[in-house]
Length: 274
Image 1 (cartoon, rainbow, N blue to C red):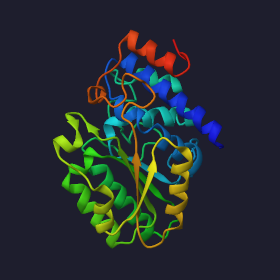
Image 2: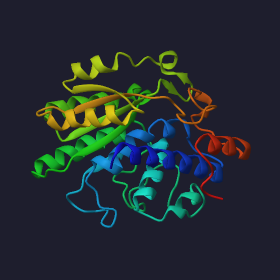
Image 3: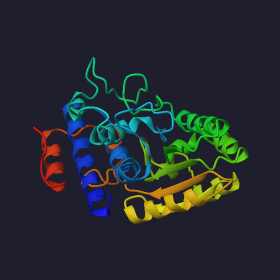
């Protein structure tokens, strides 16, 4: 898929995120919108998955460690064809397949149930170790939030991944600088992120998390890296693509009302769904 098509996918995912949260009346737009280019690249260019056979044994795996950003994952899975896109508009409703956090038993394409920060990253490490033990060529991709780095379990997993030389593990940090209570550095400083992961034995790369060329280049370097897991620290903007949500901690976990939804859709090129 070329860059123009990836850009189109990203716009579609952003519209779907806004619309599903509007219809649900709750959810997490900020950290979903900041990760759109990362998931667009993974699902529509990089990962080897089969939407018609979600449990294919030799597939690449993806774990959304920052599970509250489920809308971006659901939007990607729906657009990829893992389930009908009409399911998106049932987000968080009683009886819906799509709830507030990813759930692996009922959602095709979800490889791990996540929500408690740090546990998804730890599970991704376990998946990568299991695939290596079985001599499978599949890779594991995972996405963490930068505020998630405040969890101690992240660093235990990081140490284990380097110790076992998991070069089949590629992680992204959605480094948008904000969490629910405000700027990370005011809540609990996480910097210097790159130096910390290097000290733990990881191959560390940086990229503009909204630039497809930089994301793709980082993934190419990661594939060439042997004997180490790779961490791609992606500089992003919370709420990217919707002007009044950008860099606003208040949009971490708040759904847009109709006026806000309409404004967002106008900024993204027009409403696709009624």
